Length: 202
Image (tube, rainbow, N blue to C red):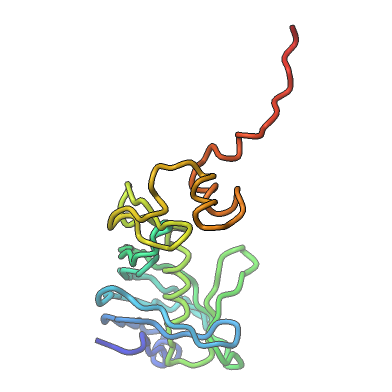
């Protein structure tokens, strides 16, 4: 298992030779917004990358990356493994003045990974590719009951005192909180009680 996904492009730059790298990762460490970020995987994530020179300091990267991200269930916040099968493909451009490799948009509209060190660290590129491919939200189960909005109890493990079927007013009186706050949100129709609908034409 490798700590950092790197591909050595010195020979590719000097002799227009192909380059190859492969390995597995249990996490990725990269910089974003001036701060170090860490993306952890539920299991070792294999990657395989080939780079083919195009001439003039430009190359084409292609390959595969199969990370299993760890995301939170949108309802109960449990960890949810999210496996991804990513097909990689991007243009590369060598610029010795560049300190950190980064993606920028070319005149053609395509993204180009610009790098300055021939010993190219692919951490940021792989992390961004994985995060862009991840779903916006996930559930650990389709029928997840979520958390009690009052005490935070995981309702998948059984009901709590706040989930008893009693009128919202009685719960509010019991707990001494104003009517229509967090408890009222548990009843999707609570907000309709005082709704005044316009009278129809007679």
